Length: 284
Length: 284
DNA sequence: TGCGTGGATCGGGATCACTTATACCCGGAC
DNA sequence: GTCCGGGTATAAGTGATCCCGATCCACGCA
Image 1 (cartoon, rainbow over the protein chains, first blue to last red):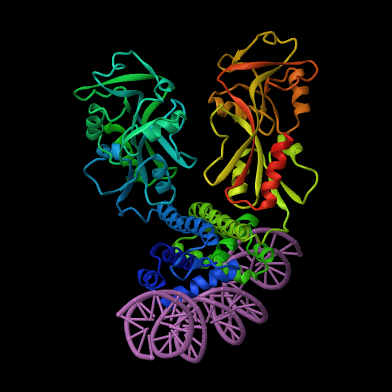
Image 2 (cartoon, rainbow over the protein chains, first blue to last red; image 1 turned 45 degrees about the vertical axis):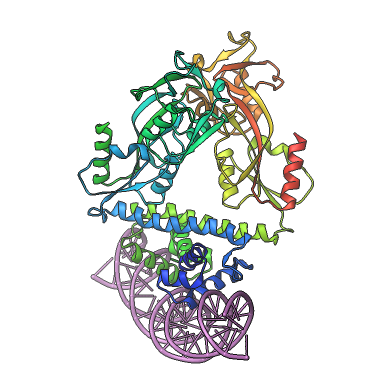
């Protein structure tokens, strides 16, 4: 099996057209057609529908899942070899960052930031070789790893703080010394996925279904504050945060969860990567 | 990049010889040599040492990690396509089982058992397509998944019981109503990895280092009982187990952990696989 | 019916991937 | 030193393959 054919298949599936895939890859349409035909011959079944539209069949979807993995590993293999042979000394360090950690990056130095939504996406970028370092934050139990951590990665904790609930100062619960999340499942929560301590992270770390209110798909902590103050829903935040005007933070007593910021690097990083990881760890 | 070359490289690395790899794969030694040379040319660096012995270089080790993933995904892609096209109707259902769950398999029916050590190894067998179903047991917090569970897998819990500590009846702690694991880190534990509620699973689920005594690398619950009775160390067990002669089981009150048995299948199983999963689930 | 779009197919030159045969390298025996 | 044996690299030849340009074909549309 040749990975060029897999790339053709994947590109056709993405672009929805043999000719567009061909021009994207610098092949002729004929070659792409032959690639796909060859894969279908070895698979023994059609992988794409042609008419009325070009789209994966059910067999094709399964096949593509693995094909994409193979292509990712092919790139990762190249990157890994370049890393150990040190032939990447002059290429910029590529950093995967979650929205809330972007400000930790040093301004100086040759580096390329890869924006990712959460720790799991950062792990994918790291293992596929798209990133050399990841600076991620997320919600987990105190001794649990953040999602997506695995072997072959060196993890370094930059900051860790217990989690609290962000409430308007006038809210009936704002005066409490602490709160149990289980008693708040019927409250309305902002529906966030990319913010610091996003409700989706909170919900999955706590393994609790939370009732969702207004949805916010951005990443800005300021907007979250405005929405909470306006009563559109609750949101979590690191308990050591200075509460924005008009808001209070009440610590979560159960379940015991923390917001953690981590730097992750491959087990065998080049010097420039290590230096960057140290800089972020020290910046804090 | 051609996966045949990757297979040659991997086989050379495994057998430690170009000629042995060649005969194992049905190639000539010359072809294997050219495969490896081609990969080294594209990688731009030697991947294997030739003399005094054939072994991966550091770049080769990194490369091989990804190469093996690619080969696994190639097989998995074939298996996945065969699954959805139903061309595997007459092949036996392949089941990955942990040592403690083997007795749950129905005796009748065409099936092939793949023995694995733990839930994580079963997950690897499942995603690589080596197994259609997995019947696994392991230790985890009550609402946590067992290690190695992921998306694209349908999980069904067969049995779940709290965990207790297996003690000789004469042991000073044997009369207690419950025990805290944190107070037992200095006790001596049997060093097991493949038994039901093995100490390595217990330790990693509880995130506690336990002091290890005698090591037992087998899987027999009977042997574990004999070793505990003889005072070689403590061991965990499902709390609902009928204690063997001369032993008592004291429930663990903290951390709250359970021993769980699960059946896992791919998201789109063929009928024969589903039937088997149901049979195991019903057997209990 | 004729036309435009887009995938499939055909023929042919360049390249590739094997095989066989042979060269090369190194350690050990004499 | 020389020869031998186990083992990898290289050379030459051949059939398969890859990819291109050209053309065919199916379909939707006016």
